[in-house]
Image (cartoon, rainbow, N blue to C red; front, side):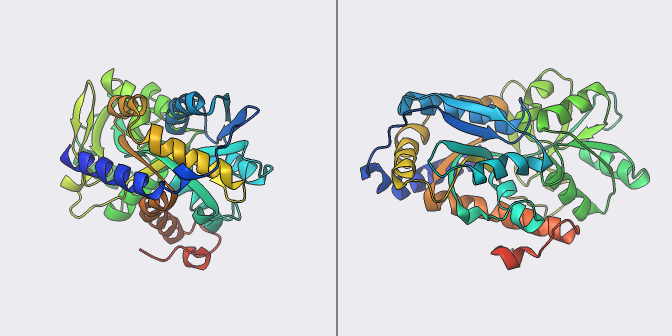
Length: 335
């Protein structure tokens, strides 16, 4: 928990410092509802935290924020729709920054992470969760089973999703193979494991938390080098205790607005982040309850925080032969 407090304090301080100029800029007063595209299915990690954040921003902006789910193509369809919308400030998108940063190298969207304004709210950690009817009591047992039987079904939200990246990182570190079963979001992937349609999911803790508390999913490890506490359950130990030297950068989530919108839109959002989000109680409560890290940031602080996961994700996909172009050709050097 000490690491979590340090991360939260450092990012909040950086966010306030970085946004000080935005706080003095011209105020934007939206005169119609804002469309906020969630490019994943309802109920998943992006949908959950985006709805909490949107409700808090409505209080500040005095205008309705309409959350629209547009899942498909690993989140790239909804992100592309936001990118191609008129640059008037009334169409935003949301999700994981590491996904947004890899669409260009995957050939899904001709825009990189630095072509967007990032407004981060939480960081998420993936968890190896299994159906309780399976025999595996720890992640070491699961890895041994996967070595013996390379067609164990793993549910994720699709290629480039946090869950898929987590399983690919495990595969790369251990050499195990698996049968990848994809869904239109993290919530459907978790439900598939609960129902027994798949044996394993490596989706994010926030998507598994309720099922873990209800003992409908057995968590084996975080896909991380740090433990994670889920309110009402306890601590999930990191996979680094089983796979020595395993590391994974935090997966930052937030709201994204294409560059090129009026400057007052971004100044107003930066001011809102500095004054209402960096210490927001609703988001803190959400993070504690769902097993996320409360880590708000915007501007350059957000770009700096998110980029390590973008790098790791892009090069993991490239090594697996899934990219159209090498990440370093689109501004993502090898970590």
